Length: 88
Image 1 (cartoon, rainbow, N blue to C red):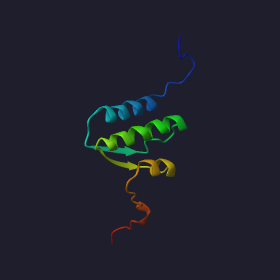
Image 2: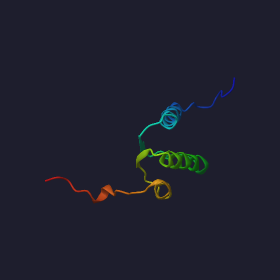
Image 3: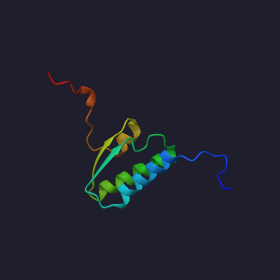
Image 4: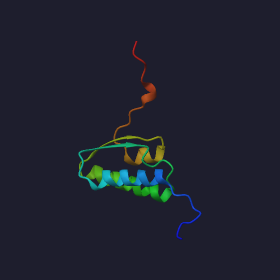
């Protein structure tokens, strides 16, 4: 039986499906929360390329990204939320 004895990553599968849905649709806005978290370097590069292509096609992208290299590759504007203060 193929895959016997190996765990199935439902979380990973769910992520890939949700991610793919965002990229096959012609959306005006794409919201991403750590889109490259837990990806190896090759898959991280694929995601960065996909985000860059969406931006070239006019999609606005808002992303939460902690990886400095990924942020540098996809961000036009960076908002540092650490500078925010609580309202009085």
